[in-house]
Length: 434
Ligand SMILES: *Cc1c(COP(=O)(O)O)cnc(C)c1O
Image 1 (cartoon, protein in one colour):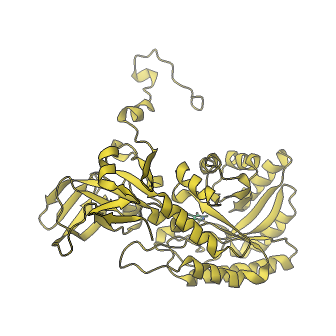
Image 2: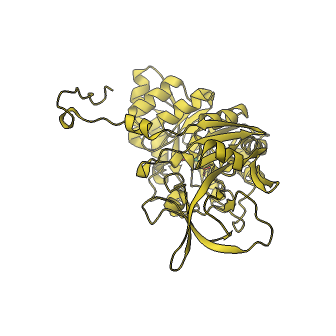
Image 3: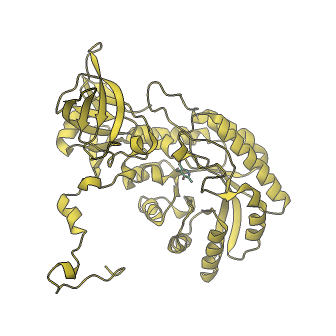
């Protein structure tokens, strides 16, 4: 459920008319609904209300500080995958004691930063990372609280590029090595073993793969305890999918997901950590774009809109489907046409949807690309020298720009002409010094 609905024939974000907003902000832009963000976090939190659980929102799904702040107000912690995300989470008011740090390639600087911040848990993904963390912690006379991310070898996820829990994926430590690594880690002076972590993939629309992975994890906890390890937390990652269109499979409700988890975890007596991302923010955002041209090809009609794959990468990267709606509502029964909705980028892959039925559209019409709150704005780039598009938050009748659109001049300001291409007299900034 979300708060993007037609009122008086125009799509609104909560009480805000998106046609009016588009005229104010300029297109394209992302629009998020605060009420939807709060609602989703509350539904998820409530599903785990009766157990000891940390809901660590996965920052990478949507890392705008205003979005994080709203979720922090609802009690969320954070799952971060870089030093930058850690700083964002802290800047938005998430206490370090509610932050877990995932990722296969944490740098030494990032490990040191996270230790200094005093985060809740490092989800360690390899033996060399364990060694590095141990050394850095010892040099600071600290102990790093860790879980190993173990790879349960379970297939899951809506697309090959978002499956993370198969043996051949780069994530986590091999299941077969886990007992050895836990016993090594337990003897390290700079390491404090706290738990077990998994994350099997994203946009998962059925319970079965979760259940298979969680059962394996529960067995591992029992085994590790028998080996003498203290396991007091289990981090089950994220991955719960959302419905992306009217014909999509409805993913399990958070209550069903939670009940299955509680059934498996109850005998273990552990604190649970959950890392939902998409489920919280996905349906809380839309991308508003304007039709530049309606173009008739030999075989197809193309709707060329002013958003491109640099503004929303998911269709090109994952073959993802997003519903596209006209912002100005068409009367029921108005004739539909099949369009390929494409962007202006010089790439054939710059296509949002193929052969999509839409009411007759004209140059200048606005469209809303739905369910783009997750993995949308965070994946934007400036390809084709297109400025990053703004993000706007609506809350009731209020609206605010929460990321501003840079100008082309702002973009050019970041680049430098080396002295030898200029007049030979300039001083080049030293690498690493600027
Ligand atoms: C991406 C990611 C998540 C969030 O996944 P969603 O599918 O958005 O819920 C959680 N944990 C880790 C480690 C991740 O990499």
